[in-house]
Image (tube, rainbow, N blue to C red):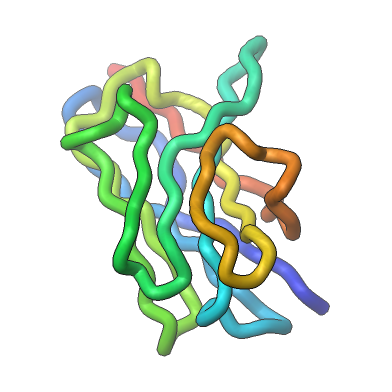
Length: 126
């Protein structure tokens, strides 16, 4: 069964850090760009970060640049999202998803992404 499974969410105070993981099963990540998305209550889902299949190119939404880092370990079949200096507005359910083989990252084209994970909750609150 092809799937992506997110983990690593939780409750953290403003200014804190979390590292999310997106583990693939049923396929290898080597040929796929992976994106991270989030959805806050009452808001539309937005793209947060994307990493190319090789890891050589990354894309971020402006609101997280300088605070979040996306990376991948293809040997572990896992993509990570390191989140530092967290703010209350970062609260939401974080999902990962993959693009078709060798497709370049484009956070705005959410319809192109497949195999969405169930998500992991991130809550930033004091």
